[in-house]
Image (cartoon, rainbow, N blue to C red; front, top):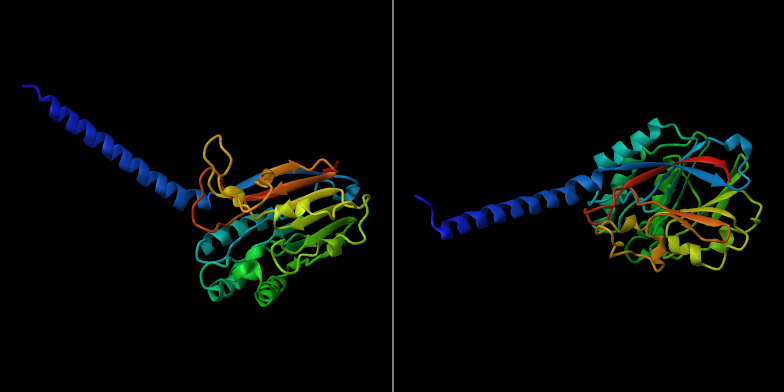
Length: 288
């Protein structure tokens, strides 16, 4: 005896609804629990004009946006940092946002030293700049930034605040965050010439569009965007905290002797990522 058409339609509807529910649940688990912790190690060359010959082949690990705080699992952060340390890079740079301003800042600042105990160090230098979150609410609290800097320096990280330093003929320029009260790139870049072999660290890639770079030729490494955290297939990220939307992630040729690389970062603000995996970039230095 065959079932009436209504019964077949009902069963088909229930199967379809059940499959859709499972897909939604699986998608929610993926974007919240899997991709935010699915770190990608991007390996690529870093051709530097006038790079000192003895630095050819050196590895530079670029980390960004730890966002120590309630939205990022500290065990995940520690595992990433430990893995970078096993690579024994010659140089390590961090481009800002040690902490997040969301949630109790006392919690973020209290957790930061435990995370930084595992921060990898370059054999010849470990450098960092601050991000907007390192200044707390409104990106304006210099006293919070001072605590972040103190924790970083206690962990052996050289925080460059509108300053530069040179390692074996390669100059590292550190510019304070664009949105914060102490962004002074003209001071950081003072004394450089177009012949200086240099890498600049600036948390917010919009810093590249300030009219201060006439004597700089080289790479600018940034973070801040997280790649948008969510990127629909075949479309740009809908939400980016920058003015110049060319600077979402990856390499950008600025067509004036400068090249920009924007890391997608290790952490996140909201614990959601889709089609934008977190990133650590391992560059190999070479002559341009």
